[in-house]
Length: 88
Image (cartoon, rainbow, N blue to C red):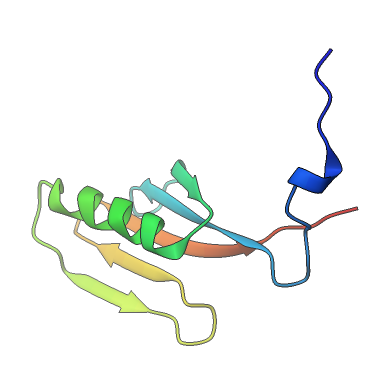
C-alpha cells in the first residue's frame, strides 16, 4: 500500500484550475487531448494541434469572459478551456 503525505500535496483552493485541450468536428462531440496544470503547457499543445490541421483555419477566437480559445476549420475545431477543480 502506498501512503501519500498530505504535506506534499498542493491544496485545492477556489483558484485551482486545469486547462483542457479538446478536438472534434462541427456538430460532433470532441475528445480530450490533454489536461494541463499550466496554461502555457496547454497553449503549446493547442498550437501543435493547430499546425497539424489538414485545412486552412477559418476562425481563431478567445472568449473574454472565460479565456477559452477556439480554432476552427470547415471540418475540425480545437479548443483550450479553463476548468475549476472542485474539492471535497
